[in-house]
Length: 408
Image (cartoon, rainbow, N blue to C red; front, side, top):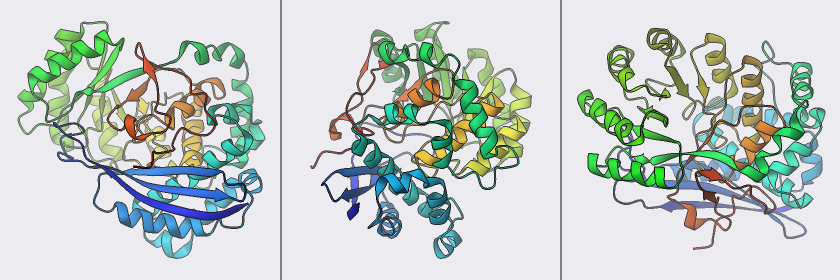
């Protein structure tokens, strides 16, 4: 039974231009952390990600949600978590502040993720192992399909999971080989051209076969020059992604993305405003066969549904720290499975939680094991930091979701 809740405002300084992009040029990586303490002393830890200012507001909202779980048994809670999630996300006063987005939804992610961590720890399992052990019906009981039933009913979700069971044993080889990663840290926006060149060489030496560059300069010639530097150093066989972090209007994106086609990007990420589904459709049609990736700032399953319906997204980057936590992440993954679109999460968690979720996606849902973003900047702050060797995430063996932070 959940006896106590603790909410923490954790903020970490970066240096040397790390974490910078075209919009967020001076970030302070921060977590709104929720801890759920049960009557046996086990602590479930979950968090959501911000860039500093306002993190305290998210903590206050997380406190509000977490208090409603005191006195509940974690097994009973998770057996019907879909309905619990629906109730919390639609709490009338907080829903007005969203709905299903912004501070209140980030806070719900922190609390939801703590529930999943506590559940896995109570069962003595890593989260990935718990999730793949669940029956299709048990999985669907943990998610809320309201507002997406036009595309995904509970019956259809169960059917998709059952269909994916074929070949699941063969897909478990990923547990031994490791899940491929890609290096985001080669090309932060504030890095010099020379630092980008050196970081590319370093990433290749560390075994990465995919990497990402931040673009979105006011002078798009800078973006073009730097993109070609990465291609020159990495060679033709390495996947290179370009990330504009919403910097361009549609008019600007149409011009710049066509200019960037010559270096053959694997995808162009967040080219314009994340709420503008129609703009992304226009752009994706204009620059095909190059594909768009999006999801870092898409807050809920409904907007993801709209992107999938429009056919504008080639890759979905749903982040369990941006949507309402693991529960809504699974909902989006099932929607993507139905539409045949790869899931490549954004890792506001530095890959700690998502290393579990991509294993579940691949083994249980049958998603392609494409790769998972790797950002190393906060690794030293975790009790069990994600382990990446030769460009792959090694399978976590500790119980829980790997989200426990050290006491600084």
